[in-house]
Image (cartoon, rainbow, N blue to C red; front, side, top):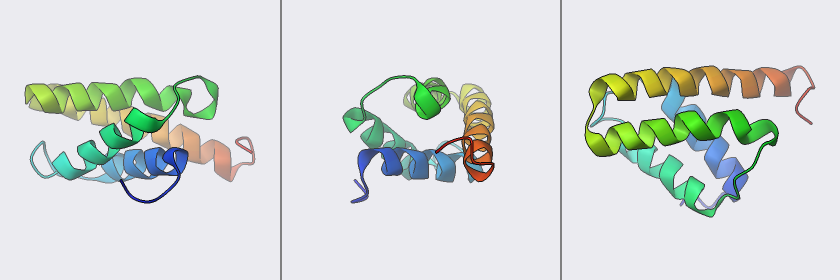
Length: 94
């Protein structure tokens, strides 16, 4: 784990994965970071709610070695991460 608090580790790892351009193999360390953060983060709604589904989809695609599902899941994660940071930047996430 990164040494960050669980919430920060989850947001950081999701953001890094969403912005990465590597495929399944190149992104494996980031997928592991997302998975590790999810293991200790309480699930729920709120601002992080939209990230949970896409993060899980990317992890599942990685485990199945499904490149197409991985790309789709990472795009969904990108969209969710964008929404999270957009809201934070506009003062809607405090």
